[in-house]
Amino acid sequence: MKNPLTEVDQTKLVDPFGRPIEYVRLSVTDKCNLRCFYCMPKGCKNFESSSNWLSFDEIERVMAVFGSLGVNRVRLTGGEPLVRKGLAQLSLRISKLPGINDLSLSTNATLLSQQAESLYAAGIRRINVSLDTLNQQQFCQITGGGKLKQVLTGLDKAQEVGFKPIKVNMVVMKDTCLDDYQQVLEYCMQNDFTLRFIETMPIGSPGRDGSKQYLSLQTVKKRLEKQYDLIPGIMTGGGPARYYRINGTSFEIGFITPISQHFCETCNRVRVSVDGTLYLCLGQDDKVELRPLLRAGISDDDLKKVIIDAIAKKPERHEFNKKPDKIVRFMSMTGG
Image (tube, rainbow, N blue to C red; front, side, top):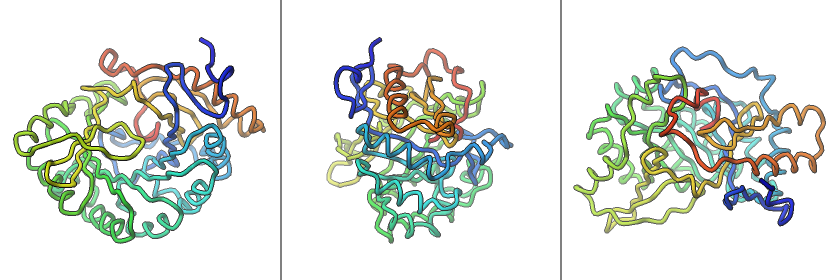
């Protein structure tokens, strides 16, 4: 298949299916201070050597090239991005790049209270926080020993500093009881946070706990419709959530449904892992390793060509439904 960019507009990234690529999810570490079972295997110690992490200079260079090709959104992810030292300095460097006008962060918020002010000063304005329950015992089980109070303190600090919107991401599982998501919903409504429900995905080793816990969000939506009058909502952002608003309020609820109602036709994103691997689809193995090229002295022009050629090979969609055991890398390795 011909690369559409070789004959049309080489300042924009458009994949073979006409989807503009405007969003990069950038993993700055594969390490995390929690052990959520749907993201990282129990006892995981197989982390990427720090010598293989992209340096801040290398990250800035890659993001500058993406910015020159029309990417305007960058989200910092991990692992847990706040465990990487100097994240605020990196954020500032990225936020100053031409073309990048939306810098956001995904975090578990356990370290957010200490870093919120410096991250805001560095140009981050929007954050997503993982929070699957408000029950401390359940939270401890899901996260492998995490402390719920640290997350709630981080969210309080983020709100105080001025991040907006603050989105709370809740992975809904079979064992999630009605009280759990009702409590999280009420907490978000009281604090003017946006709540987003997420389906578990079949990523990691076959027979993983996350896959066993899959629950269609269509079920959750039907339950909520019995309590609330949900009407279609509009929420700015580059992600895949479908939003609804509780009628008579400004409260938004998002549904991220990679399995029950996939959103591949509107996919506008790629991922760059901490070791510099460019992943073209979360649910496929298509990738390009950028780190060896960077360390071999590739020019910016040639790096542009590599990225353009990679986007020309972006697959149309994932195969989570047909081949649930296909992707054996864990989410913490790919970047959230």
